[in-house]
Structures are given as structure tokens and as C-alpha cells.
Amino acid sequence: MSKIQKRNFKDSIKYLKKDEWDKLKGSIDNYRDKLIITLLYATGMRVGEFTKLKLEDIDFSERFIRIPPENSKTGEGRTIFVPQEVLNDIKAYLKLEKTKKGRIFEVTPRRIQQLLKKYSTRAGVEATPHTLRHTHVVHSLLDKVPITAVQKQVGHKRLTTTQIYSDLAPEQVRAAYEGRNSK
Image (cartoon, rainbow, N blue to C red):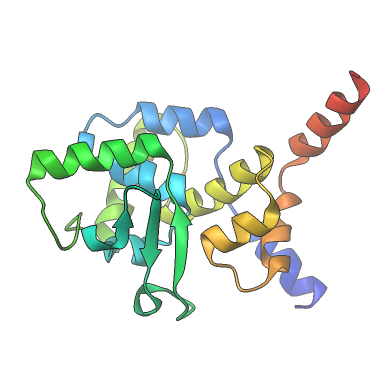
């Protein structure tokens, strides 16, 4: 990737700061919609992968979602981690909806875009499904998740793609230096 391409990619990355993410989440008054948006953020899944998610793809005991190769943009399957609290919300939703198998959410990528437009307008932030993916990557790096783990989670083929995100969070550098200087 040339410097020009890399710069353009970095300039195109939009993510929510932590307070903006909190505002967005707080603006959602529908249980299903909140679960959809939270799951996208918590996993960093692409919207296309998300809309194909089936109950059979979730391992509740190991806390993983399996993305089959045919559902992935890259054509390579992967296993992604899901926080326990989000899994608990999925279980509650499945019980409420009486879902036993198949797709968890009957939504299209377009419908998810519409939901995010509605709630981000309400919250006074700008968010798309891809913004949530970028936000997942940046927040994970800020929370000191190893970059190789983030790369695997979101399915980047090259580590350099994931590394571009670390340049977006100058607060990470400040926090590292402040932590070092306080010792």
C-alpha cells in the first residue's frame, strides 16, 4: 500500500469517541435495536456478516461466534469473541422471540443503516455500521487489547491494516506516557 493510499484510508476512518458511543447507546429505546447496535460494536463484525448470523454460529459456553467463510468479505472464516454480558442479552432476546434456530435477526444491511441513522441523529453523533466496526477497533486498542487479537477479531488479512487505527487515537499515547510518568 503506498503512502497516498494509506493516508486516504486513514482519513476515511470514522469512529466514535467513548462519550459519543455512550450517547448513541443511551439514545436507543428499543431492546432489539440496542442489542443489534451493541453486538455490532462489541464484536467489530461487518454488517454483512452480522445479517447472516445464525443461532448455530454462537458458542455460548466458549463465548465465540463463528463467521463461516461464505459469510465473510475475505472468504475466510474466523471465530470472534463476544463479551458475556452481550451473550446474556442475546439469550434473553432469543427467549423473548422464541428463536430456536436460524437467523437471529431478520434484518438487512440497509435496515441496520436506517436504525443507526435514526439513533445517531437522536444522540447528536454520526454513526454507520462501519463506524461501529472502526469504533470497536479503536476502543479495543485504547483498552490495550493486543493488536494481533484485534486483527483476528475483525478479520483483517494484514496487520498493517489494523496498525493504521492505532494512529487515530493520540489519547492512547498520552495515557501510556501519563501512566509511565506517574510511577
